[in-house]
Image 1 (cartoon, one colour):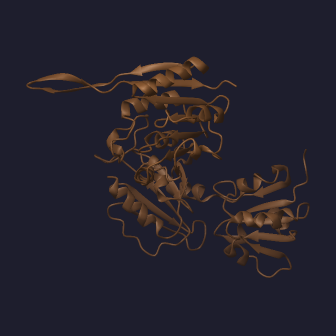
Image 2 (cartoon, rainbow, N blue to C red; image 1 turned 120 degrees about the horizontal axis):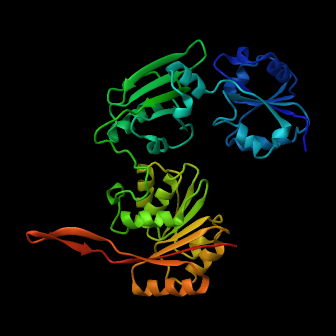
Image 3 (cartoon, rainbow, N blue to C red; image 1 turned 120 degrees about the vertical axis):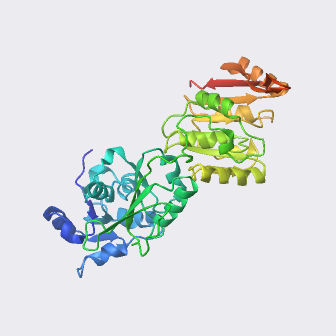
Length: 404
């Protein structure tokens, strides 16, 4: 049902209130409550309006905002409120019919126009309040990346990360205070980066180029095992590629990786799309720590890592779209609980090496269906002065889709 908008969102740039349209200024003047950061509120000057600075977390301000429902309330934001801004968060609790937005040019739009880059061809990343390692999956040959910085130290840290990954020739352009009187644009290669006195509000544009020997993440599933730190407890890359295919990740889905070992399945699941989530469940503390290091090194710092054993560790987890059982299948109740927890349309995949586990998977296939596949891998190795095949232990994989 359509409603009269009472909540107004105002995107503000470095030009301050001067950059607002006449309609936006009129709407702002009518607000009885103005909510924003201290910097934006300071731009208003004296007025009789009630003001509220964003608390931490921002959502703590929502009760005060919702208490004014039906009265004119103004929200001040940087640039475009719906591009890495407060807009979508507010829209999760307030109907879009109740809101009207007056966006300003985003930092990405301004940066693209300054550099002459096609914004639609760029990877757009926010590092504000987020781990720096989120940039890693976007480091691809000739990629153009624009990143919102956390603070003035972010560009230098990005340069260091690029160098460690063999991308020292990548060019970084630091764009500060875009659209205002203090605008400044400076560039340097990652290897020679020495820019100082960087403003806290800055955007970094990265032209990755092509760097021989750089560690670019392949876009296919089944990363080489040497991408992961492990103690031998890892789904080998050929088997991992087949397993990921069976799990069939789709945008925004959640995976449970039970008996995660090195975390390779959960990590590669998340690499398939930036919106994908995973929970890696692992009973050994040393492996839990190792999974965390692998997740950072491969650019998925948001991986949830749970130290515990199934089935107890599975209680109260969000309902998954897919489940991989790499360890613990023979523990009483694990397969049943996993199957019951799975969302309709979800996929369950289990790999087994031992005859005991393979027998268990055969039993479950007879009970609820699915497909059993044996996967055998052999590698060529020297035999004296000749070459022969050395087979690895075959893997039996059970995959099943939950239709209802």
